[in-house]
Image (cartoon, rainbow, N blue to C red):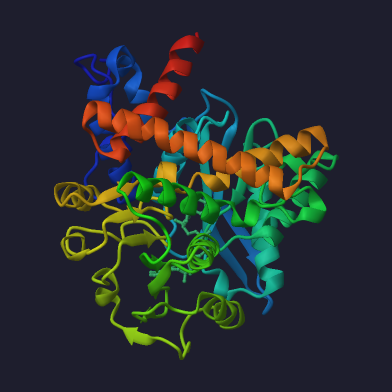
Length: 431
Ligand code: NAD
């Protein structure tokens, strides 16, 4: 007897949304877009299934002689529009569900800003703060070697994400190059400049956040100088965003990182705070602001709120307390679907992750193009092109949202999913 007996296709386990963490959030977002896809809706299940998911064992010898095993993942969600592209996360809470969701958001993001990539993401379930530099290098190199069969300059190109940086990209590039017998700078982006990295890449995500925030404020009749901003996360995305808002005359009144929440009504001295974070690894101990509860951070009186840390931070409990007029999603997946509905009903504008934080992948694309052509651009040229792409993407998505009376998130998904599914349809099914 054939199974399933009815002849109906058997749904993979990850299509059931209950209890699946970030992947459930992603699936609900996809569900919302299907009614707006017209004839392309026929192909929409493509979006609810990752193309490939690889789970790898990453064993290393610790400095004390013991052997430790870590679990690693690389998921290629969709490759219809080009090679896979998406970062590598090192975090103790990384799960397959999380990496699948992040890979799906990469597909939508790359299509929403129209860079010629599919979506992918990777991660290792490890707390890197517990590792020595040598152990971190061994984890990175062994993980790279294990996912070697999926990655490559024209196949799938990783980049930094939470707790990974330029040095880790340098080790990944070296490991891949040694294994393949040729220096392949284009296998990762977010590399050091000396190894084919791009000027402006480190600041690109924050610069993109700042650019779309400025456009959104303009649409609401607000100007950046004097506005009050609250930022969760002071890493690559949150730290650069904080600096750009501060430099443009806004007041960053509240910040939160993994250790502490701080508030100062007339604006925190951001250059000094970032120096403190660089020295101590956290904002904890910064004297020139009041320490507040984590819950109070979400209630801060401000115009702009930027979650730039991890997923699921804005939920049905704190979404009702937010006082900001605009939420700019620096992080991937920071807002749960329930919180999204609450914010929509409260007329709080949410600029979604797939648009707001796309500056990083946009300059990663520039880096990859520069590596292929071995011709490097000036920082001015890079920032100019970045701002142009981000502004155009914002306005085309804004227009779809206005025309269809839908949220900016659903509009960004309409734009991104339509491009992916159009490519899917044109390529056709094999065999
Ligand atoms: P990062 O490692 O540089 O910084 C992470 C920040 O989040 C740190 O300040 C950390 O203290 C804070 N944080 C961690 N756990 C927290 C918690 N429980 N509560 C409050 N704060 C917490 O990471 P990043 O590169 O800035 O990435 C942040 C987010 O932006 C992630 O969702 C990532 O996927 C997304 N993102 C990053 C890039 C990029 O180019 N780096 C691009 C697009 C999206």
